[in-house]
Image 1 (cartoon, rainbow, N blue to C red):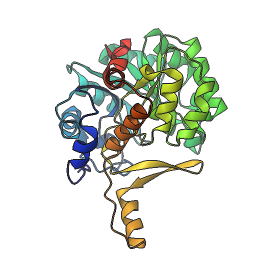
Image 2: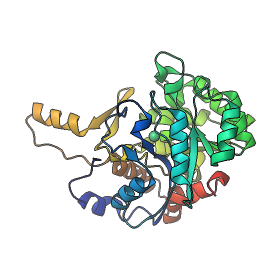
Image 3: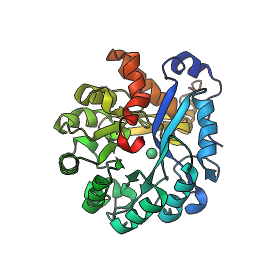
Image 4: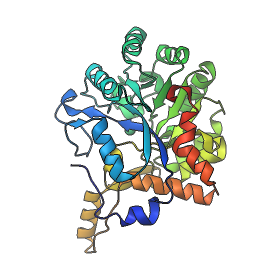
Length: 329
Ligand SMILES: [Zn+2]
């Protein structure tokens, strides 16, 4: 159903001794595909019901023996019924100590609706996404087109987190993105902004080039989710300090085989399929890819080794940094 490497050698040789025993996973998608049209998921073959039990079961194979807590939210899809997906998430994490949930919002979600859902279901944060922007090519959306000022203001009043996956070709190096993040962080100091995917550093240079224009507000954090090259992590650790970096698996994206690489000014996903086609066309023995989730941990390990992070620093990234955020306590 979900991809796994063919054996556990890669884990034993590379991951086992690096990952601490306590993990707070800041970026987890849980969902039931009956809340969307036709299993509307990008290249992921998962069962219909990807709930907390499934997550725990898979994570126990992925990182055996760890104590895991998490911040969970729906899988944003264009066809998703947000209301059903949010209620589902709330049901899933209910009564699970250490598990928190963010409400998936569109720009049409009113503050009143959010307030009601928070009162009933105890959401600790908001998750916005470009797919709900009105722009034709949503990947070019301005932040304000999928996260409204009123929503940020609400998050500030309630001391909530907001997981923000920015878009536009230059990601964090885009002046309009930078301007809005700087302003929101300054004007709404009680909300915590978590820039997903290391500020969408799939092409590391966007994070490297943009990060120094980001003001050092204390409410700006980054998650590591699905980033498989170390440049963006190094830029964050260098500029903001390791305490602003939060481990995130991006489950179930963590369980795709392959990785994302920078190429020219862009990035591409190398999946098991592309690698197979490449091997066939070039008449070479196939390269056996491992999980995106392991590749991302390898990128973090690379940053940790090259920047001489201590064992304590690594424990902070995997657990303590998130637990210092009030919404995750
Ligand atoms: Zn994600």
